[in-house]
Length: 174
Image (cartoon, rainbow, N blue to C red):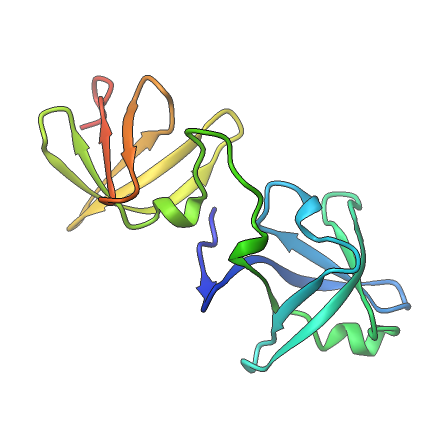
């Protein structure tokens, strides 16, 4: 599932979900497609469960049996790392990588209106489900929900400027 949250000109890219070992290492749930967004030596904004914010420097990040590990400068023991559990990690929007043509950040798609080829409004994209083969847009209008596969044959046009998407729904999806 997606986490489209933003904070001022920052983008939510992960959350601390636990600790690992005795030397201040944290377990990370990354909302990014790649761990390369967590640059060693780079600064990251952390908001803890109480809403307090601080900037931390990243020592390193690495994959580890399904849950990546991250180390921050100044966090050197288990007790310090424990205080970060539940904290959200943000980077400035300007640090997001450039996308290929016809690729979009989920945060840009959440909230746009979806229309059929007959100009029938299906609703707004509420969330996005990652399935492995393709994403699925969860579109809601009132109490009705439509799941739309993010396939080239279905999604005809995305207009971020006007916050509109046009789709050609396969039989049975309307």
